[in-house]
Amino acid sequence: MANPLAALGPVPALDNSYGAMLLGTSCGLMLYGLTLHQTYRYFRLYPRDMKLFKIFVFLILTLETMHTLIWMIACYHFLITDYFNPASILTGHWTVKSNVAITGAANLLCQTFYARRVYLLGPKSRWIVALAAVSMAACLGFDIGATVEAFRLSLSQFPRFSWLVSAAYGCAVATDVLLTGALIRVLLRSRTGFKRTDSTLDMLIVYSINTGLLTSVTGLLVFVFALILPGNYIYAGISIVNAKLYANSVLAVLNSRRSLASGARVVDDFELYPTGNSSSSRSQRSHPGVEAWSGPQVSVSLHHSAMGAVKVPAPVHDLEASRISASSSQMEKGAHRADLLGVSSAI
Image 1 (spheres, rainbow, N blue to C red):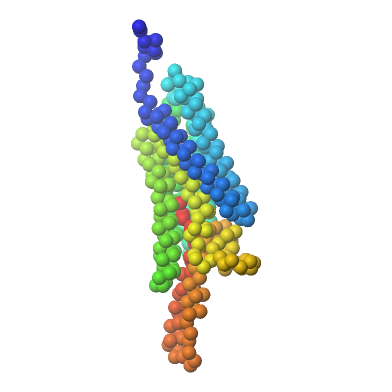
Image 2 (image 1 turned 135 degrees about the horizontal axis):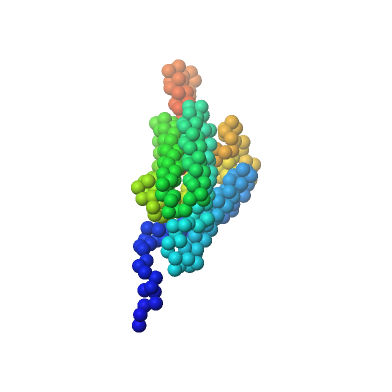
């Protein structure tokens, strides 16, 4: 019996088009489930957070939901509706064409959160934020340009302009490196020589690097594949995973405040208060000049306990008093930086 599909002719290889899109969407769905879990966890653990943070988390969830839906619709369109027409991928679909804009908006929102945290570190770090802002603006411009060209052209013509996608992700990676470098630089310069404070700072450095490692790697892969293999969907599949990692990294930062807080005090609702069983009211902020946008913090109360343990007999030698004062000042400086940075991560 003759094969009824033989008249259709040979079907081109679909591994680097439909295959990449399907794998990227599948991985994205798994990470979207993690996004839903982290969002639920955030609203459950921090119901008293300021409204700005709740709106921020809601926007992340909305953009990630839209991002997930458009790729599910794209898979259904190409793999079910146009099952017998593999060449339809060359003409494109509105879901694929709008992907760049939605992905760019989601990534920009996450990077703005990190840029704001670096800005709050002080004037010495704000020139880095200025550079990051220029890179973020360039990324947004490339995303808009790529979206316009995607709707204006068919996907068979779009490879000529895929460099726009590559440039956008190149700027995103540059922004990540700038912000992460600024945080690590401040943390390293805040070391005091006291074990407890330095251990907290070391933990924050490792946390900052690990949180942003996957987003940087996937962003770099999108940059490379969009540049060297513009005629397929490999870079699009990786970009799906990259967008989900951005969202989950920010939500992980917000949800890790309690687990990374010091044993003496924790931070909830972005205010410091004791962890004891007493029903006393919350204490005032340790640093009233720091805006609430500085986000999660880890309180280091070393300077309180250390100063309480130091008993200076009277009279005391001027040199010894000066040494104690210098040690106290150094500990307070490191603790203040740890309080300000908290569990911040630039990526």
